[in-house]
Amino acid sequence: MDFTRLPFETGEMLAGLRPWIECESPTYDAAAVNRMMDLAAHDFATLGASVERIPGRMGLGGSLRARFPHPVPNTPGILVSGHFDTVHPLGTLASLPFRIDGNRAYGPGILDMKGGNFIAFEAMRQLIRAGIETKLPVTFLMTPDEEIGTPSTRELIEMEAARNRYVLVPEPAREENGVVTGRYAIARYNLEARGKPSHAGVSPKSGRSAIREMARRVLEIDAMSGEECTFSVGVIDGGQWVNCVSSLCTAQALSMAKTDEDLEAGIARMLALSCTENGVEFAVTRGVTRPVWQPGRPETMALYEKALALAGRLGVSLPHGSSGGGSDGNFTGAMGIATLCGLGVRGAGYHTLEEHIEIDSLIDRGRLMAGLFATLD
Image 1 (tube, rainbow, N blue to C red):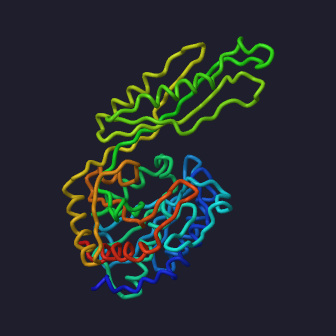
Image 2: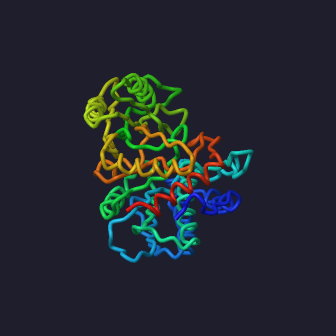
Image 3: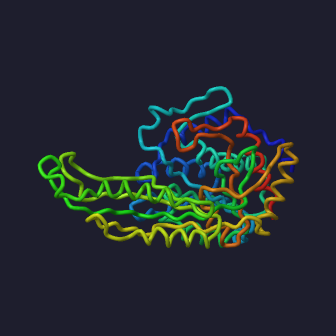
C-alpha cells in the first residue's frame, strides 16, 4: 500500500472541514458542543463506523465514540483521542469567520483542534475509499471538555486507551512540522476571596474589598513563577454593583511544571496561600490535574520512529519534543501506552481571533495519519 499516493484533495478537505468550524462549540455551552457531536456522528456514520453517543455529565456536553469495522474487532488497536470543545464563545464567527487567505484558513477552533480531528477522519475515508484495510481496529473518541482540563471525561479516555495499543492525538503540530512525545504537568485551582460589603460612596472604609484582595493575590501568584514551576491567573469574576464594596471575588489559576515533583511543590505553595488577611478570607482549592507525560518513554519513542519513517516516505521532516500546554495525551502517555501527540495540522494563533491553519498541511498531515492507520501493527 502506497499511502503517499492516496488522492487527498485540498478543496474537498476544506469543504468538508468548513461545517465543523461553523458549528461553534465552546466548552461551557453543552448544547452547542452536542450539536458538534451530532454533526460529526453523521459524518462518521457515512464511513460505516459504529457510532455511539455517550451522555455528558457535570453540566458539560457528551462524547462521541466511533469504531470502524475490523475482522478482529477485539484486538487492541489504535485510538484517536480528540476534543470538539473550543475556547471561543458563541458568536465568534462574526469576528473570526471561516475564510481562506492564501495558504491560510481561519476560523474558531480550526487549529485547536477541529482541523486535526478532520484530517484523521479524512485519512480513514481515504483508506476506505481505496479498499485498504487497517492492520488493527481503529476507534475515535471525541470529548467535550479538554479546554477546561478534562474534568468529566478523563476516566472515559483512560478506560478506552487501556483497550488499545496506540493512542494518536491530533492536537496542533509543533514548530517545523514537529510532533509531541511528552508534556508538562498542569494543575488548576479555584480561588475565592470573601470580604465585607459596604456602600462604596457613603462608607467605603467600613467594607473589606474582595476584589482588592484578589488583585493583590494575583500579583503574588504571578511572582511565584520560576524555572521549576510557572503560575498564572486567567479568570476573575467579582462584584455586582459599582457602588458596593465587593464581598466576593472568585478566580481560576493554573501551574505548570516539567516533573510531577515540581508540580506537587507548586500545589503546596498555592494551597498555603489560604488564610485571612486584611479582613478578607482567601481560599485556594485544587482543581483538575494533568500528570507529567515523561519524554523519552520507550513505547512512545518506538511509535515516533514508525511515524518518522512514514514522514521520510512523504519527504517531510518530523522533529519531536516535549511541550507545555496540556492535552489528553498527558493521561495516556502517563499510563505507559504508546502515545503520539501534535499530529494535527500546522498553523498559529490558536485561542485568539487570528487562529488559522496552513492549508498545505492538510494533505501531508492527512497522509501521515493514513500511513499510521494502515501500517501500525
